[in-house]
Image: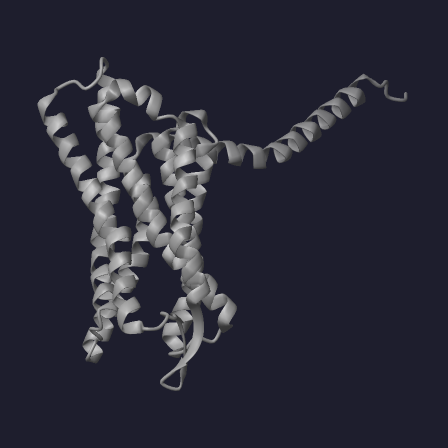
Length: 307
């Protein structure tokens, strides 16, 4: 449900020139990452229901790699979106040169390259192993695990969450100060409304992301530091927090649909155009048949009847 809803609305409007903005190119990057991780949910759901991993070693590596790619590309993309908003609000002249679609696409490529620094090693370390007489899909930390385990957890927590959130917070603090201090950001009230509206959209997307991912990030950090859930209630809370992280991938298309007026307008035009293209051949056939019937009737009227 969510994967098609996310990529569909994101790919479609990008076909419109009006929607090929830096913000929407970043949104497409989020859509791509979210769709990939949502495709893994049937496998992860089966793992939870059965209590073991039944899909083999190769698919285990793929699912783990996608999870980490999504974690890093999402936070990096939201950070890029926040910096983009900061430039648009606080440095409008410089934004004319910096905020171009080509540069946004280059940033997206760089984001995936940076995410590969973690995604590729994790794919190599991921494996289906026997733990407590059950097969589990997990990341095999190299020895000595007492050293590399906590170090890995702390690095993931810092670079995939804490540092990006700090950068985002600084950007929005500066933007809020700017928005409060200036009544008109640009020479046009319409442009000013658009700037403020898009800034609110990005802020809501970031806030929802932080709200959904903070619990699971804290739990994963605690596990990496050696703190294991000691009761069934703690395990249930951990699973709920993990599910909350995936819920974020489902919420973004809803946020775009309700908060971005340009997005809604372009998506409606895209849907109408698609419907017309589908109906076009049928309408042409109907018109052709109607013309044939009219011509036949006219011919029958002009041919003289036998006496």
